[in-house]
Image 1 (cartoon, rainbow, N blue to C red):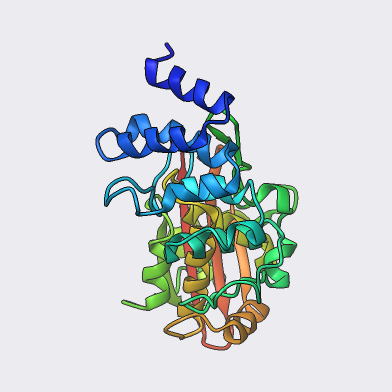
Image 2: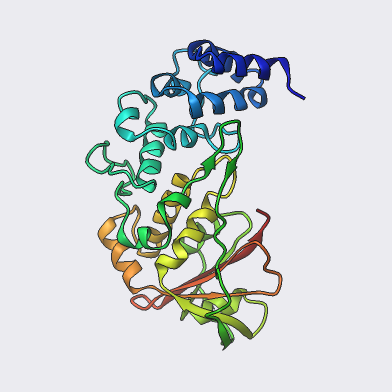
Length: 309
């Protein structure tokens, strides 16, 4: 049933009365965020950028502005980033966290942002590396938002096909390495994932998480695994794809032994990683089973789990 507020918001949008609609969002945001969410989505999706960007301005009061984690079907800054170029948004966005996430989203969508935005404070480049671009097309990297609310997204399960999988006898399992930063970070990618770090190879790490000694498994380049890792790290509506990309860059930096991402070191790690994906009988729609081996250090990591889409 359409409420009075929803009807009012629709009429204001249809008439192009964006300042009034923005004011309605701000009045509701502090007291009724659930009601304000669809209104914010409407502004972020359909308003001209000079009005939509004001969703994040703090001039309306401490609780009136949308923030980094405001969401309906997805965060409002991601809705906005799918609608306008960085060239148009850059002069309008004020809060630094939102500017950063919008810039990274525009890079994911294929826009040249490097050199046009302030340097990322954590060192993650705004230009996608070749291995980031190889695994997925621009059109499916970010949620496809709908005008009236809601969004579509492609699901990246790993392994994404059983065609190239073969029977593999796993070893007994490598010796776990306790407290390693890469293992802690990989465990934080998504709450439905279990992670382990071992001294050994990718099969040694997989053996710690796979349910049996004989599995269907296959080797793949890291670029093919990358989209599933990013999506796992941005799996809830509160988070956008930019959050997922940043999380994976920090994971790779930790695996390379760095405190913060350094593109040269991450690229070198990705080039030498040996990746193994395996399937499990319970796999249905959204799952991730991946082992990553760094032959330079003799360490391997594995993450495994299933989730509801």
